[in-house]
Length: 287
Ligand code: HXC
Ligand code: NAP
Image (cartoon, rainbow, N blue to C red):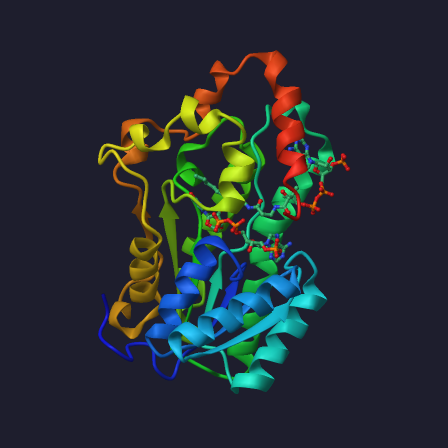
C-alpha cells in the first residue's frame, strides 16, 4: 500500500512478532525497508521467523527472547535491540494471551495470566521504551497497540482479555495527550476476526468454527486478510500518519456494529461441553 522504502531508517520492535498477526506486520515492515526486532517467549520460533522473513524480504530482522510480563526482561530486550540497531523508533505492542471460558470457571491465576500478558506486558514495554525516549531526548517516536473491538463493548467468555484490552486502550488515549510533548504518538488498532493459529486454537476449538462461523457475523461476510491489517499498521507507524495521535482504528468489516461483544454467542454452549472444550484448548499449549 505504501510506497517502496516508506519505513526506511526506522527500527520497529514487534512484541509477539514470531507468529500470527505480529509476523504478518513484521513482514510488511521489512518489505518497506524498516529494521524489525521480534520478541516473545519462544526463541526458537522467533529465530525461524526472522530467518524466513529476512530471506523473503532482504531486510534485517532481529529475534530477541523476552517475556513481556517481566520488567527486567523488557529492559534487557530494549537494550539488546538498541545495541544491535542503534535506536528504536516504534514500539508495537502485539503480544497477547487469551482463551474462551465462562468467568466462573477461571481461577484467580487464570484471570491474572491474561491481565499480566496484555495489560502489564504492554505497560512494561511502554514504560521501558517511553522513559528511554524521554531520557535520550529522541523524538518522532510512536507506539501502536493492538486491542480489540470488545475493548469498548466488553464481551462475555473472554472477560480477562476484555478488561486488559480496555486498559490498554485507556493507556493509548491517556499517553497520546501526556507524552505528546516528548514527540511521541500513541495509536491503536482494533481488529475483528483475522484467523491465526494462536487465536483460533484458543477461541474456536473443536467444531466451534463450524458452529459459529465468524465470517457470518461480519457485514462484509468474510474474515480479515493479514495483509489488510499490515497495511493499516504500516501507515500508522509511518511518518505519513504524523498528525494521527490517540486514535483507535477499527478494521473488522463492520462486525462490532452488527453485534457487539464478540463472544457473547457462547451462551449457546451447554454447560456440559465446557470440560471438553477446556481439555482441547489446554492440549494445544506450546504446539
Ligand atoms: C481455564 C486455564 C486455561 C483454560 C490455562 N488456564 N488455560 N483455565 N481454561 N483453557 C489456567 C491454568 O490452569 C493456570 O491457572 C493459569 O491459567 C495459567 O496457565 P499456564 O498454562 O500456567 O499459563 P502460561 O503458560 O503462562 O500460558 C498463558 C496462556 C496460553 C494464556 C494460558 O494460552 C498462552 O501461552 N497464550 C499465548 C498466545 C495466545 O493466547 N494467543 C491468542 C491471542 S488472541 P491455575 O489456577 O491452574 O494455576 C486474542 C484475540 C482477541 O487476543 C480477539 C479475537 C477475535
Ligand atoms: P498469536 O499468534 O497467538 O500471537 C500472540 C503472540 O504473543 C505470540 O507470538 C506469543 O508468542 C506472544 N506472547 C504471548 N505471551 C507472551 C509473553 N508473556 N511475552 C511475550 N510474548 C508473548 O495470536 P494473534 O491472533 O496473532 O494475536 C496478535 C494480536 O492481535 C494480539 O494482541 C491479539 O489480542 C490481537 N487480536 C487478534 C485478533 C484475531 O482475530 N487474530 C483479533 C483481535 C485482536 P510466544 O508464545 O512465543 O510467547
